[in-house]
Image (tube, rainbow, N blue to C red; front, side):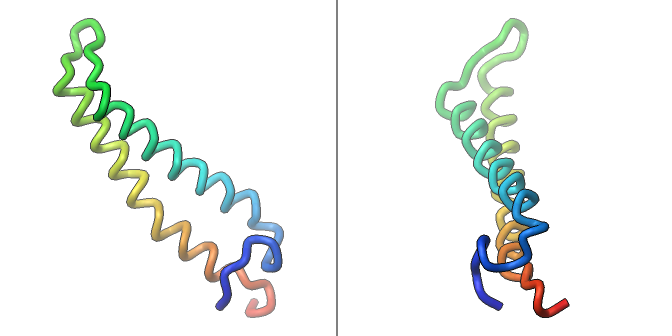
Length: 78
């Protein structure tokens, strides 16, 4: 079980890249919503902050899945 996105199973490469982008995007959007605390029309800043925390939490919850995919994508073991 070694970590490598290039040497292991290349058929799952784009799946792992997309999952990594989802993680980064969720965390980035969550942090931006928490830091800026925007209020949009009838939605106040408290609600957008809570939504930002939830989106960031979803991004953090995807990290173990990404790590598992990166460590178990060895084509030789199948």
